[in-house]
Length: 405
Image (tube, rainbow, N blue to C red):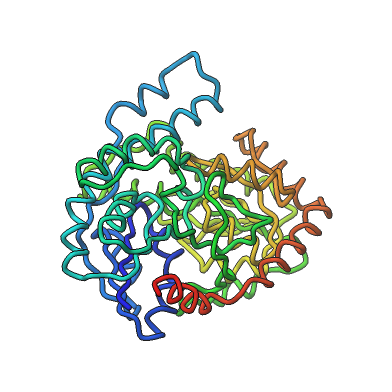
């Protein structure tokens, strides 16, 4: 079986796809990943073919429309987020889908896949699969969870007409063959799409991951807090400074360097804890750090979370799943996009708290509240058991083979 996988957005999207792609490749299937130059490295150590054919995704893709929403004074925070998510849906089902179709259709016609696994930001593949008469499934991502299919129907139907495909009335046609997830139905973060093929979250996506020895030597007579802000914003910041594709920070997202500074100040206030802060390589002044705060560029998060008492996170969907898999309480400091909805869902499930006071004092207070809440810990144990009851990801191979027929 030939499997085409599309990946764009951020490295976290590719890491979410890796477990299924590895299982398919190990079973002897031919896997081709169509991705961007900046994301190709995610797949470099795996037995899949990589085609660097997609453009890097940048905030400038949305033009001035996002800024106009931000500058409106008649909107509260929730209304502003709703409008931005609608703009996202209309953009990825309109101009972005058209651009990706021009690239991906020739790739698919040459490769002749029997199945497509797609990035949640890639709706061009929905139409490509319809044209080729093959199934397609979205893989785990914030876009799959939070983009309202109703806001994509008009744009996709316009493209269907251009491709001489029949238009459809059902917005859920974008997931006509289901979707892949690593979260049990009772703990789903998907707001619109139907039920999924659900498999157990893999603890160690990076096969070479190991904790450095200095982490193993940290004191264990106090709670351990791990703080990380994800990869998307730091990647954009890095691209701005290394001569890569032009990018501007999203108007609706905090500056990652300022967010990191605030997180470190909150960590300093948690003097009853040991705090690890992953900086993602962003510049930081560490000259006045108290001894209980430890900075590092990055750590193997899925492994470390097995020993963490509170995870201070941006609320990206990879981090959400990894904290569920390890039953780690979360204090969620959302930055942009789906992270705000993920924070609310986490709080609604009772698995952590959303941070609304974004000051160092507010962040530290929520971390303390989560640490002290035994009910959160009990609910997380239940969620972890539900995660462990899911089939292993290797069983996806049989399910997908049956789907292709």
